Image 1 (cartoon, rainbow, N blue to C red):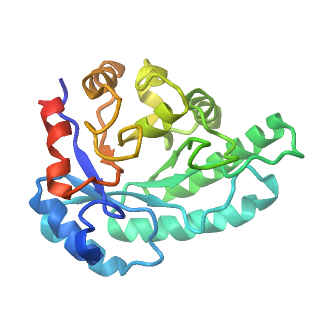
Image 2 (cartoon, rainbow, N blue to C red):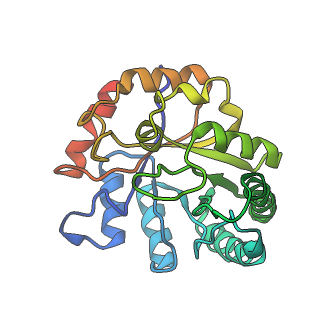
Length: 256
């Protein structure tokens, strides 16, 4: 089985004692991880983040497009493009490879097809902006339990929109936790779709804690990712139940 490179979401991991971001990055390096990722970049000292990652030999794998603009709303395309441009410039200074966007909440007064069209237009615009900076734009479906009223919640829906966008630099972020919460059989929806997958997130269900604390069969999930032809990062985006370092053990063993 492929041993996937692992990146830690430092919003949650290595955050014991409310450690500064640079300490979280150092701890991730000491734990033997390959990269780090985070959501918000505007609240961080990017120069310090970059220096800490470089010192630890870590890749900065992903961050969000900020501010987060609902791309389901066609009226806000220009606003999204501005956010994407600012975020892409910030990411490029860090050597960060990817930016992430979600659909936003559904618009009850707008036909579903029009909302799909708005998202595809935004993915194309954002993908072109990201591409000019050497980045990939990731589109993430979110479950509607943690994110009520989210428009794109299913993997198949997300894959269809990414495919329709038709850009090499626009991919799906497949989150195993969100997939499981939506009742999908984790790993199944991406079979044969590795060319459309740019990143994978893991957390167990229920609770969104580390793999091994819930009901997901991680050996099967990893096998399915391998069989699908996925070879990118596996992002650890969970709330550890105890010590962050100890939380890595189950997935490490499953990858062996």
